[in-house]
Structure formats: structure tokens, C-alpha cells
Length: 345
Image (cartoon, rainbow, N blue to C red; front, side, top):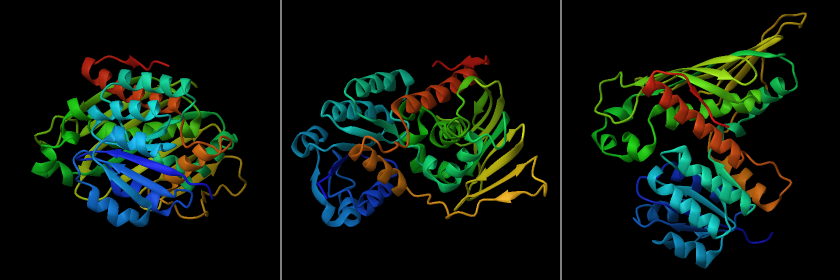
């Protein structure tokens, strides 16, 4: 097997590092990992999780890219700092898997997508839920026309309030929109916005709604969002996105069509059920395939395979990554202005 090196460009307060390290450690095609973190805060974790695959720990992103010349870079850091790291990786001729949101404005991510396209490099935002077995089964049901013409959708992603009550979280970049790009909608709701477009093959054209702080915590982000969405296929959708629970999550995507409906429950291992109008038994059917893998490992594996083989399917394209960011920022503009916002293509 040819040597395949991955660089992880990160920093203090980075998200999902343990997930990326676990994915790199278990992906057979990855032979070596270089981690670059100016703060040095993740060195112990990298050594523990990557073991012999960790060939170098650097404090300088540029040096790691120049010295190791990796074909793939994973970028996970504060949103205000990510764009520069992505740019450096692309200039070093790397494909890039970037942790969301990687920007505080879609306008900062857009030139990175153009640059990646120009260099024939992949730029992929970490929309890991696309790789779930239940999600892929649901997409096949919709794309094959089994539920017919899509009429409407409901997106529901509710998380717990635990982090919101932690004083250290109040001081983190996650809790400051100027550093994070947004709150619950940007951090969690973005996954469901991406999923509904991935499942239906339809883009969100317009958004309207509200965001705010309903839990009373001293935050500079929203803890709640309620949005109405118009799709380019003529259908409508609604989304509830917030930190409401004492623990756990309540997450589902429901889609209705002219021939039936389906519902994805993505709590834990995930479930999928659907109903088709033309079934003589008129029974609700349930997905019986393998349990969902909710880790980042399938995402890392798919990105590595996509870099090694140009015929292998990518988890997400640069254009799709940019579009979901544009949609979330359009939702924020709608909430701020009180006016429906069009999502630019």
C-alpha cells in the first residue's frame, strides 16, 4: 500500500479532534499523520490516539505542510482562523477536509472553493451525517421516486443546555458569534439543512424566521432558531433548532411526498421508517440494515478514498459545502432583518 500522509492543522479549542484522530488511527490507507498546533494543547491527545502513525508534532502549520507534503489536510480550529489554514493547505496542493463552519461569513469561504476548483483539489466541509446508513437508505428511497414528488419537510434538532451553563463555555469562541459565525443553527442546525438538500436533491431558495436567546444564559450566540424554508422544487420546510433539553438530543428529519413519507430519527444509532401509499398492506416499513456509525471515522475514510481514487464518491463537494453555509447565513440575515432572504446560488 502506498504511503499516504495526512496533516491535521489545528489550534486551541478545536472541535472534534478526538473524532478525527480516531478516524485517522483506524483508516488503513493512512500511513502517517503530522499534527500542527501552535498552542501545543493537543500533543498528548495526538500521541495517545494516533500512536505510531503520529510521525511529527509541529507548532507551525506552514512548516508541517512544507516538510510533510501531505495529499490531505484536516483543518479544525476557531472559525476566524480556519480560512487562512485552508488557504495554506490548498497552496501546498492538499485536498482539505474542514470542520464547520471554517468562516464567519460565507464570503470568506467562497474564494477558497474557487481556489480549490482551480487547483483541482477537493474542499469538503465536515457534514458527517451524510455517511450514515439510514441517511443513504432514505436518499435512495427519495431519489428513486418511491415517495413521489416531495411536498414538504420538517427538520427538528434539539440538544441539551449543559454547555450553555458552563462559565468556561461563555468565554470560548463557540459562544461568541464574531468568532464562531453563529450558535446552535451554525453548530448543529447546519447538519440538518445539509441533510434535507442532500436527501431531496433540492436547494433552499429562501429563508425566513427567528433566532434568539430563550434560556437566559450570557451568550453572544443564539440558543434557539425557528425557520421557514422554500425549496427550488416548489416545496416548503420548517426547522426547529435549539438547546432546550436537560440532557441528550431529539433529532429527526421528516419528508412527505405524493406517494408516501419517511422519517429519520438520528438519536443514538439512528432509525428510518417510511410509508408508501400504494402498498397493499399499508404498513409502516423500517430500515433493517446495519446500525449507524455516528463517529467521524466513515467521513475520514471516505475523504481519504476520494483523494486516492478520483472515481471514488466524495462525501461532499466544495460547491455543496459553500451552499449550506450560504443558507445558514441567509437564515441569520432573515432573523436580523425580519425579512425573507434569498439564498444566492
